[in-house]
Every structure is written in C-alpha cells, then in structure tokens.
Length: 480
Image 1: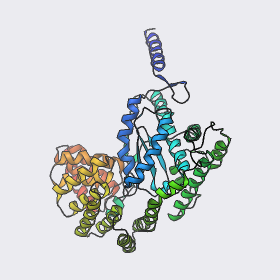
Image 2: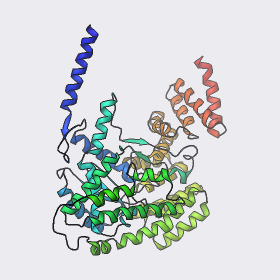
Image 3: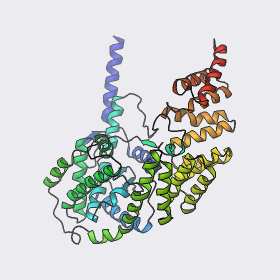
C-alpha cells in the first residue's frame, strides 16, 4: 500500500513538473514541453561554437574578409530583426570549408565558403540564413533535447564528443589532422525542416525579396553538393555523405514543391527582389579564393590522405607559389612534412601560417606536434594547450598534449588528456600503452595492467605493444 502511494505521488509530481516545464513556442504560439531554458540554449551555443567552426579536415575556422563579412552580417541582422526571436544574441561567420553547408545554433549562424560561393543573389543568401535562423526561432534543437530529457533519466547536455577516424590514424602526422570533433547537434525532423523552409520564405518576403529565389537557392545547394561529391571521387548517389551533409532534410523535390505552394505575404520588393548585382560584386573575391582552395588545398589534402606525399607536396607547393597569403596552404604543407619526419621544415611551415594568422588553430596544433617530435616537450605543451583552448574538441591535440605530459613525467596530467582521447579512439595503436605507463607512474597498478592488456589487444606487434607485454607480465604477479 505504501509503495502504491509513493508511486502515485511520483506520477503526480512528474505530471506537475511536466506542466511547469511547458513554454510557448515563439513561432507557433502554442504550449510545448520545454526543459531547456533560453539561457541554457545560449550557453549551449557558446560551448558548441568553437568545436563547430574548427571541426573538420584540418579545421576550418573563419574565412577572413572583413568587408564581405560586414556586408553579409548586415543582411543577417536584417533577418534577425524580422525573426520570431529578435532578442537573442546572434553572431555571423563564414566558415572556411569547401563543404556546401550552413548551420545555426543559439547565438550563431554560419555559412561555409563552399555554399556561399554557389549562391547567386542576396535573396538566395537571405533564404538560406533565414532557414537556419528559423530552426533557432522555432526552438527545434531545444524542443528535441527536451523530449530526450523527458524520456531519459539523468540525460546531460553533452556538447562535444571527441571523435577519431579509427585505427592507425593517430600515429601519423597528416592523418592526425583528420581527428576532428563531432559536434553533438540534434538532428531535425522532416517537419522541422519544412517549417524552417516556411520561415525562410516568410523572413525573406518581409525583407522585400522575391520568394522564387528560395527555389533557386535549393537548386544551387543541390548543384554544389553534387560538384563536391564528384570532386572528392564520390557520386551524387553516395547516400551516407548526403545524409551527413543534409541530415534529415527531406528530399529536394519535396521541399521545392512545398516552397512553391507557400503564399508569401504581400509586400514591396527591395529593388529587383534579388539583390543579385551587389551580391555578385561583393562575393567575387571569395569565389576566386574558393577556386584556389578547390584546385590546390582540397586536391593536395585528398592526395595526402592516399599516402601520395610527394604528389601532394607538389600540388600544395604550386598553390603556395600562387597564393602565399593562405594559412591553410602552409599548414597542410607542414603536416605533409611531419609525415615525412622533416620536423624542422614542418615547424617553419606552421610558423609561416601563423605569421599570416596568429590564431589559426590547426597551425598552432601542428607547431605543438612538431615540438613534440623534436623532443621540446615544454614548448609542445604550451602550443597544444593553446590549440585546445581554441578548439576544445581537438582529439589530436589531446593525444599529443597527453604524450608531452608523459615525457615531462607528469602522469596525472597525461591521464587528463590521454583518457578522453582513448575513449574517442579505442583502437589507436599507441595510446593504451601510455595510459598504462601513466597509471603505473601514478600508483594505480590495476588500471595500468588493464591498459597494457588493451594495448596488447589493439596492437601487440608495435614497440608499445612489446613494452606493454613486459609491463603487464610484471604487474600480473603482484595483482594475484
């Protein structure tokens, strides 16, 4: 009887809690379950942003063009002013990535170089940004998170999960650059995507743009995605890539049909309703830069991933000779040199990148890795801590910082960075030995033994594997 009363009380309490956790959706005006406050949304966005902007092949970071950014930011602020949540803070950036994409999290809205250069007018840009900002306006991410919290006891807001490419990657310099961060963003439902399309059309028409340009924007996105797939050796039928790129977006044909049925509000057009002339003028510089990245950086990067280092080096050298002002070009050269075990020249390449942009995170990480291989562990520690400060989810920086602390005989600090890396890359061929050695130095022989055994399961024939075998055999006697 007492248990029944407690159960009934629990049910009533949960019901009242759910009622108190409802909030009015800013777009629909309806009450919805919402366990994430606006303050939580903003905090989540602030924590996610550095990992999102830097995540990807050798990072991306922000494309630097103050004049272009100011122009596009003005358009973004116009959208923000007619959105359903104009009181939210918002920052705009162009991500220096060839992948055609755009994304928004509370407080930030971003378009990649690859998508921006595929658009042909202000109207198309405003629709794309309006769509992304519509997700934030309608609290789609917060709503999905609330539903997960309601059905999963103790669910925490996990902002960043270290991600790794798999076995054998962490021990080489070029491939270590692939170890990016996975941004834990909630995927949007089909209905969320269609609602964001509707909001994008609504916002653009309020600003005086012809909504027919929403259809053009979608077609240009589809064309840019196809071009990217072909240039990377994958056809447009590659479902896994398109799934990653477009998440749960409905098929383009469905969305185009949906947009064509929308009836935009009456209003006066801004100029010709497209803003095409000024947009093409303002984006002419980034379109030239985009071509350079695709011709040299992207091509050299893909070639290096195939272990064709001489060919990759020749491609990026040509790119540098034509475009010496691009930090990613010098950084890629540095990682190729690291792979060739040319640590001094590699550091010089990273130094050149940082002389152009002192905050270019991949070059800071690369400089730290080059210091590590030259046995300058105090310097590598400083550089890699700076790299993680800019990009907290940088798995490769965690690995090499942990290894630097190990060499500095600071095992507890080594564990702080090696442990999350090992969780992200459990098949890495060296990390479990160094975890074992760090645990042993810190006095935890049981944990050390377990890590040595993991090393033997992953890579028994490496130098680390042989050392792990010796230490595991020695420790096993004492653990009996």
